[in-house]
Length: 558
Image (cartoon, rainbow, N blue to C red; front, side):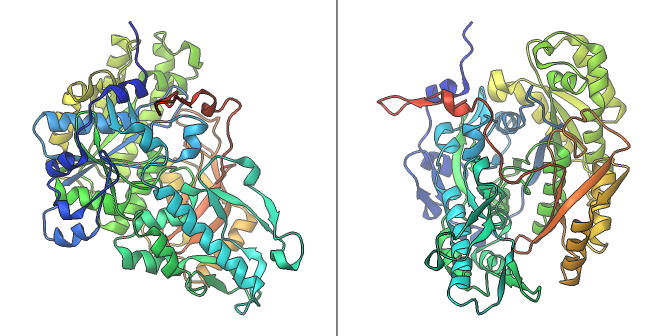
């Protein structure tokens, strides 16, 4: 039997006109801005009109620590929304917007997979509605104005050696990590060390995701710290008078994007991938819009629950006043066996011993959700044909010992129909009272916040803040940023900062090597391990298999 690729399934689906989807979501046509027949932006002024409408319940989909075997978090998110619609619930899905870099490097699950996808998937995975370009343009306008200020007399006294603002590009390109620019004489600027981040790691992406309206966007942009003076005073984008023009570039990008699932459930896709190097959540504006339009909102956060869910709960929910009703933790038997030490080629063979060894990864994530954050959870097992009854029974038994139910999810192969059991459990959990709380208080020191995340969520023994990072910490506290939440940049493959430590490692020390303030976004970024904000392409990039024919039909993209 031929197994169709994701792109084949997507291309064979008959999409509805986006206006039909907007009508189904209860959107007034006044707020719809069309991008062709199947994509639209929704004007943020809708939120003002709907401000008194009741809020729908928020369901967060997260996962175990990712593996090469794949977990299916986005697929489960989409399939769950379709399943909830199938059982008669008024539901919207709110997803993150993919970045080009991974699409051409290592293909991920940006639009879901199988029969649980959002469409038009090719557009979504490529240029979509241009949000990424707008973020990159705003970021680089600020960089240009900063360097121009230095060139034109430097009245603010900016020290070129203390510039913290980087340029960005929406592509994995290791060649751009470290460079020297402004070469070639006085007319070409001031020579200095520089570098690029990938666009989704830009503070502008975080600001776009966390802004509540255009005024909030401008205020946040004004607060961005781009570097320091010769006297170690911070210099902001507001001092460079960049905020108005940057907000103008982002005016349309701030509007959430409306698309549909294969089963025509309305879907907002807006902002936020890469929870290993950024906060990795869908935008506040899209989530709020979905909450005002539906009874249930299914959303996701990047990578495993130690990264995406932690940032969703400790940063986004705190800033936006969102209180989730339930959490879905996605796992596969295959991925758990990988955590138990099995090679990728052997994951299809029953191996109870390896599954036992790998299960602590899942159980720790689940325990964090229920114990640290006080939220009800269900484990969604994304089922593969090679999973045996004995393996599935073991996962269910171990989860039930934690007081958490397991639902088999077959949405990849069956769409919404394959997620009905999961949907019913989620609806049940949403009716349960919860005692949602954060992993740390904003009132404690920066060091204590990092330690709380490391010990409570990662289960580290302690933290080691290197001398250079400790100096940065003291400086940031002296500047008045000690009350901000922490955004930890850490490998996605392990609870620790060492990607090789799979499963549920104990006794490790989390090393913090760099601290910087994202004053506009409103958090402190703590870099750990070897994590980089500009990834590179792998030995065989996915781009080698992507093509387009003379009719414009794309192949090889998932």
